[in-house]
Image (tube, rainbow, N blue to C red; front, side):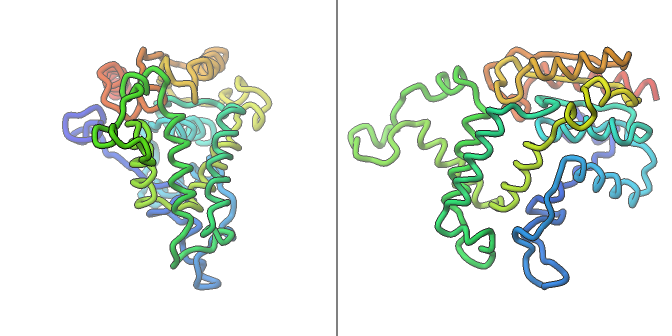
Amino acid sequence: YIGPDKTFDTNKYYIIASNVIGGCDGSSGPGSVDPDTKQPYCLNFPNVTIHDMVTAQKQLIDHLGINKLFCVAGGSMGGMQALKWSIIYPEKVASIIAIATSPSLSAQGIALNEVGRQAIINDINWNNGDYYGSHGPNAGLSLARMIGHITYLSEKHMHEKFGRRLQDSMKSNLNSKQFFQVESYLHYQGDKFVSRFDANSYIYITRAIDYFDLTAEYGSLAKAFENIASNNLIISFSSDWLYPSSQAKEIVRALRINGKNVIYTDIETDNGHDAFLIKNETLEKNISNFLKREYEKI
């Protein structure tokens, strides 16, 4: 979606894509070296919130000498950050695009995140988070990713993609540990994730998502959006049960109660929460048209 002549057209727009604090690449996180001890922070790294992530991004644009952002866009946790940008820095944001997100995660979502965290914590190599320089809780992190990945897909999409089909090489060997295609897929996703992510960061970031709650923080969702000045594009997906369309509609209602400019689209798809990471013509058109209109205003 990002590049020359693409949805986020780099011939026209300057794209800033910073990693979040608490992550494991770029910005500081639990695997970063504590300057006081010269050792990784591990669990001594402070708890991180979505608010913290946004205030760190604000310091970045200040450092770059940018007075105002044309648009803040993100999906899922990125959508939470986009909403937060409009709330705490209304004068710094002309528009936002919040995709497949919500004002707070459901109890079911929190429960699934906790199961993932427990998979890591109960790994024999967890060592209370102090595992840098050793094998690390790779099995636990892989399992956490497998659990998470199930939540990103819809039942219909999983059925169409895998059904109950067996791996061709394993049809004659039912003693195999992985003989359904869906099992093989989940193990692949888990193994791939371990090679590029840190278990402590997984714990910190999922907790930041869990604690994000605009209604609790501001008293009501309508009050949260009372002072925003941005134009807003809110997008949800019909089969997303992790961040359901009903929660996106709550955001839209709260914006409209305050008389804010908002465009809302619920896109029909069987791809579940993962839909915002997959090429989708309707999503492209919605974003492109919104950005074009906002650009013409400026």
